[in-house]
Amino acid sequence: MFQVTFSDQSLSVLNSLPQADQLSLMEKLSSMTKDILTGSDTGIGRFQRNGKVFYRLRLEELRVYFEKINIALHCHFILHKNSLNDFLVRNKMPSSDEAVLENHQSFWDYLESLAKK
Image 1 (cartoon, one colour):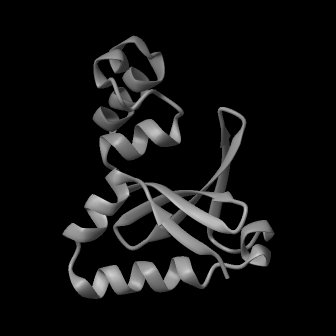
Image 2 (cartoon, one colour; image 1 turned 30 degrees about the horizontal axis):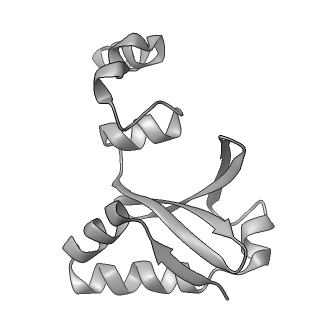
């Protein structure tokens, strides 16, 4: 079992959720084990960014991005499914300066793909 810590962004989103959703999210995070994080069939996504391994937990309409640091899981972001910021995190684009977004061809490719649906 890991200690769970939150960034300012993730704590703000957590506090804005209904209490039942808060409890569900905390239950999922607190039940994480080392075996779950290293397994391949767990529903936990994994990617590297700036030399660190990040995990993505899907929980209904939310996406929780966290990192394992020693005995803790540090939640960096709690984002809504299919939001712009979720897209930015998944595609490793800078989310702090969204104006830079239009310089990335993958963003325009993404928008064009939405228009084709």
